[in-house]
Image 1 (tube, rainbow, N blue to C red):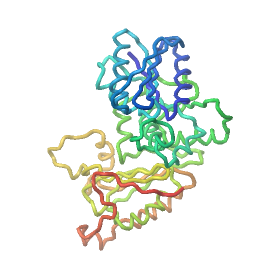
Image 2: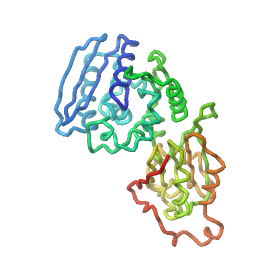
Image 3: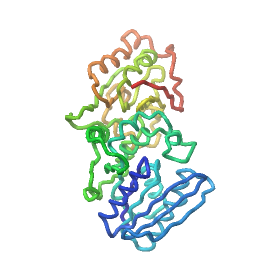
Amino acid sequence: MHLTVISSLDALCRQQACEAMAAANAQAVLVLHDLLENGLVIRRIFTNGALVERTETQLEHGCLSCTIRLDVVPTVERLLERGEEMVIIGLPPGVSSESAIGALRRGLPHSVTVDSAVLACAPDTLEDHLWDKHTLFESGFTPVPEDHRTPGEFLIGELCFNDTALLAEPALVPVDAALRRRGIQLVRELAPHADVVVDPAEIRTGRHDYQEARCRTVPGSVRIPAAVSASPFTTVTHRAGRPLHPERFRDALASLAEGCCWLRGRLWIAAAPRCRIAIQGIGPLVWLENTGPWLADREASAAPDHLDNVDARLDWHPEHGDRCTVIAATGEGLDPAEIAGLLAGCELTDAEMDAGFAALADPFQLDPAPHFAPHSN
């Protein structure tokens, strides 16, 4: 069986993308799942454009992971046993492809191949969604109050993991051509690895590489466009080979994040020198997360993890190992010299390096829990 998994922020984009995808692949079975209030899951199955099954299931715990585990995976397993060769899965809005594909890989035999992970999105609304400070629940994209992700967090996660962005434009209001063009440029800057298509027939099957997709979503990972485009959006990267002074970095953080719709990378902070600190900024929020020890600080007997070994090996220094700061900022009108100057001012001086790190205060309280902080546009 060959699967195409389609995720989306809203049901209208998903519906348009799934219907177009099914029309372009007449032999495929289309399966749509929707999670409603109070744990009600509605499953619809279409063959040749006709509805052949509609089922309502009441889940005891109406959460996104339960929807995948208790309904999506068993449905695909049943279709596999029935002999279906091509299936298109339309996930409930707000359900990530990574979680769904991970569950399908664990719950189904190796005879199932995920051909493509597709994000259906409306390009003219992308920038506004990235800057939305509300949760998915507060913005009406999911019925799960406990889901505290913002629309921007969901979209960035999908753009990182998925191999294809399918541009959907539900015909509710006229689309502003300039906003659409700007949104497409932003998609290409945020997801340089992905195919950006309008017609589902342009989707290239067999592009999904699960391990590579997971590597792109590891906190602290940095993937950037291979070349500068004519887009108004640019991505600026900077590296610092010395630890950062925690208080100077805290003071510089707002300036670093200003104007960035996406800030990401990993930090070597002197107050927690053995900890690989991931930084992520999406729209109005920035947070730091302790992801554990650097590879250079792990016990020799520790099991290797290929997900973070890639960046560690590429950044390996004969003295510092993989310890360093790497930051990438994506936005409009960013000044590379200003970002470089801000980070350079945060690096420890020779005197501070000689004095050691023990006396430095930790204003971020870098424990395993993320630290969230707002920043302005």
